[in-house]
Image 1 (cartoon, rainbow, N blue to C red):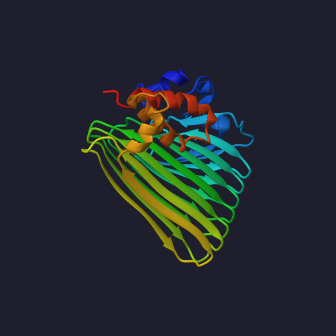
Image 2: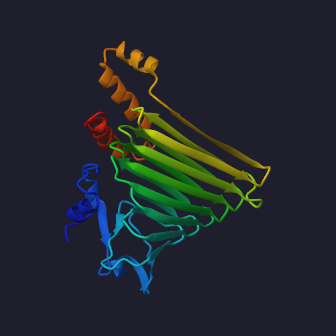
Image 3: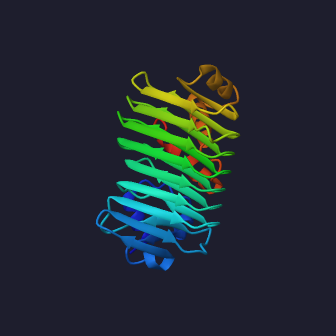
Length: 300
């Protein structure tokens, strides 16, 4: 099976991959699972556990012929794994001690759960470049001390599209860290709903968490409903959250125009920089995403 064509079908023709990146993608199906780990399957659930060692440059994509209702993926202790998310009903990732997961997903209907053991790291990025209607439901549990999650999402929504993302992060152990950054640009009657719930339990002393949702409206018909929430049950924590939704500041655009840019060029430069914050940690994606965002902004 041709890897690029197979995954390209999933992305519905959106060419979001950086040059050469697809060469590192490995398909995991019923025929190849045994090459990379152990697995068992019941009528409703497939359990898969990676085998060490795992090449850090390899990016895995699960494509099962008969999708089970739930897929449970285990990452062994001290392993580093990168996964490109594929459509599925329910998926759960269990990170072993000091394991690391880089998780990348296109905006899509999804129900994802992540369980982090002692010292493990989760780095996630959702890219929504002119997505279709979708609902994302995410749950992250920081079970062990010194666990970290960095959750970032960016959306460019147009043409009356309705996107909803619900993110729940629970700090259950001491010295845990979480960062949730979600940004969107809305035009042409698009609607975006963000619901973020971060809970710091009584056992999670000396934890740190931050959560923010920022949105720009390019049309008076676009709408945002943002609800970032913190539930703090421990006094020894550092926690911040906030949200902001507004049109582009005309003063900022005027300043850029005084440097020789047209209004359209200034707007695109400003908005691309605004969303770039969510993928700065992925340098191999930056140039490609910048160009695609410029092409899609104000492109009817």
